[in-house]
Amino acid sequence: MAVTVEKQLFLVLDDEYRIVEVGPPAEATFGPLLGRNVFECFADAASLFRPYYDHARATGDIVEFAQYYDGYAMSIAVQPLEDGQLGLSWEVLGTLDTMTLDGLRLSLAGILAKLEAHEKRTRLEHRRKSLQVIEGGA
Amino acid sequence: MTEILASGYVHDYPPDGDYYVLDGENRIVHASEGSSWRHFLGHVFCECLPFAGVVFRPRFEEARREAREVEFKAFYAGALSRIRVVPSGSDLTVFVTHLGRLNFRTLGTLTESLRQIEAVLADQASERLDPPAHGSLRALP
Image 1 (tube, one colour):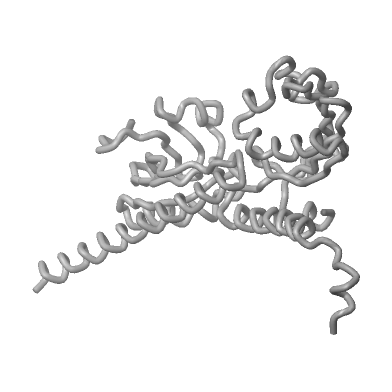
Image 2 (tube, rainbow over the protein chains, first blue to last red):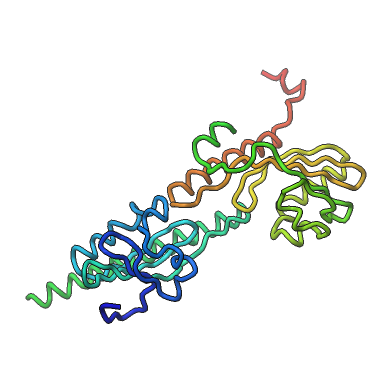
């Protein structure tokens, strides 16, 4: 890995969103996709993930966000690396239960609650950071 | 169902259904060629298919108890299916036609296909709850 990182990275993407490194936790799913553009492998994922990746690359900041995709709600951290690469790690917040209609409704409600809680937390952290900047500047 | 299939689901199932046969103890004793139920031959269906007992068993029992064919739609394992249960003594032949699969790729596709499935099942429920009106009631102003 080119840069020392705080979290273990699951995936490294190059500047064209090709998968160039796969960490052990993601090996089963992403190992066979090494070298391929991640958005070409996962339909409809570009509009959900790419804005955050682009933001991380543009600002040079680590971006954390929560997103639902293909049955999973995940908290994802995007870390800009050298040469336009991005390091990704994630944690599963919830999974969709598609076995029965009741299970589906219940798990969807749980996923939506977790996404909302994550968003609220992120907004609060943003506000706190902004306040720190203002207080530091006063 | 045609417009539902066209508008929301990933529909990669064959148009006509597979079938399996349950004996009086709900063991799968026969299944159509190439169907996934062949893996479960000899097993009690609700022991090898999680929650299948909750979803299907009441209607299977109805067909057996009333000795008549029962048809219904059900959501199970990510798919909406039309189920036709034909009793023969204590045996049941269960014909399954997959109508569509839940598209859970994004929250948008998930909520849309869930809405469509719920609408189909709600129609079915209201059909069952709305028996034909009695002649005397029809006569009321």
